[in-house]
Image (cartoon, rainbow, N blue to C red):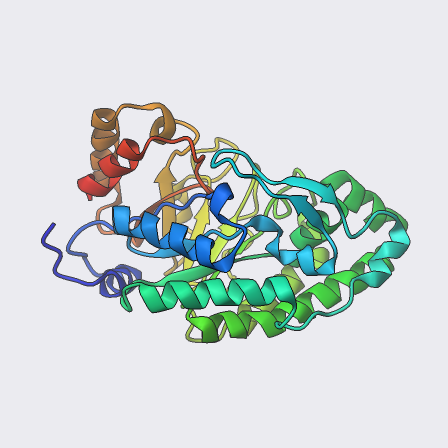
Length: 331
């Protein structure tokens, strides 16, 4: 391709509402067998980027990096397609929430992932925007205790204890996110997991246990940060979160319980949407020629919009690379 713009210039132009030289896209996935060290994680991310030349890199760390320094333990997977096995959670009984105290960015696993970001930045194109994954505090709390139902039970039985832990998690990542920026991340990919959804919490509950902490962590990323809000799950609250201070928003718009990309332009204002690649549907299961046709149709529908192609979440590692080629070559 004879691109006129760098990746950064292309994204900045789209975010300003200017017509790009071509459509922009990124896809992200886990490499479970490469996530156990900073070096192998960085190598996997860089190789994937070299293979497809995406317009930004969403750094996909092992999801448990948020909680390991508090005591979660895993048995590492050596299989590219199998997740790590969780063998211990930091929070078992309600009083264990008292043990969730603020951590420093120098905590071993947090520091390891700062090193991964630094390695990726040093070996990647300076014009490639990098966003590092950060989970919302209530989502981190769920990982600490092992499940949604257990966390909801603890919230009902001992809300003050859980709220104190949420505060300490937030303080930890308020310190950590600026270090991610210093290590080379242009911003964060801020994921709400299943919590910004009516399937987990009412909106009034999320306003209490989610939103205040979200806004603090997004503020910690800095005014010049290039942040993506990723609103996960079914029946999600992307409409209610339209005022979050981010430039880009991503969710699974292919899920019929969520708002469509087209409808979102009516309430997201000048934010840029990342989406439309149905990674559980046609991106995964269609033939490349069919994917090319679908991408062309979407390009026509999105012409003149602040829009970037992307999946609704991390894609399944099993998706054939020729399907990604079809997306990339159609831009």
